[in-house]
Amino acid sequence: MTSDFSAARVHLERAYHHLRGDDAMSRRGREALDLLIEAVAVEEFRRPRQNAEVLRFPIRRRF
Image (cartoon, rainbow, N blue to C red; front, side):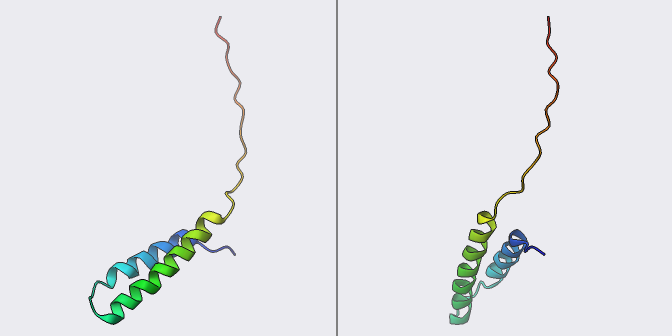
């Protein structure tokens, strides 16, 4: 089973936005989430893209 890094990143970003407070716990939580979001984003874009098969379509020549 593969991880869905893009979905995880969305959830972490939502959690970050819920911590709007100016108290110490909210600030520390946002800092921790920043680190997690960055780590997940690195993995999300590090994974090789899936290979696709290129289909060749016949070209009509106009005379």
